[in-house]
Length: 210
Image (cartoon, rainbow, N blue to C red; front, side):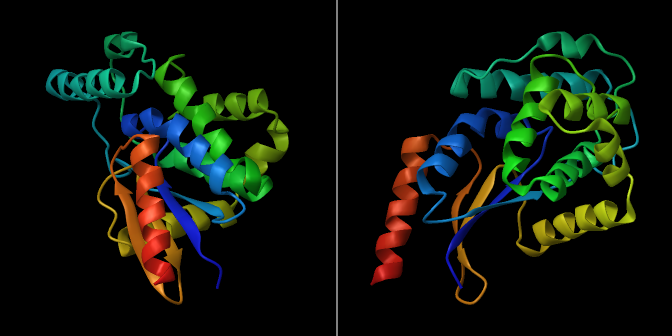
């Protein structure tokens, strides 16, 4: 089986937004050699309570750290919102929907949602907003909504969550390289610059060829 890269991410993971420029370069540079497969993690999928003051403070610190390290933009007016439940299940399902409609655009749609949430203050826990974002991206809104609401997409989203657990992913972004027959190696578990990622891939290639 051909070697490939597995990318485990979440639409509402700030480090994944910080990682967006890196993963775009990786896809551009290695798409032919190592096809990229995207899996959605379901960050906070069991969350039912709205963010309180302590939670907002903690999340803001994460965003500030990501911004400082990656220079990706953030709109901190988000923390003026009241009653927001940080559950990413529906946003993950939207990316799975995009993947089913047009597989090669799934990663770009994930980044589209990152940008919408972190810089434009679009509430991507709201299905109506997700459908608007899909239409803005270029999908047919009616087709997207029908697919999103299908049992097939709901099951595929759960399959992604299960795969994330089975692979032992505990944070995002996470990248693996290898194949199902010979196993996978971790490229990164967490954010790293492109230079670091490229070096890790080169090390794996050298090791695999020996």
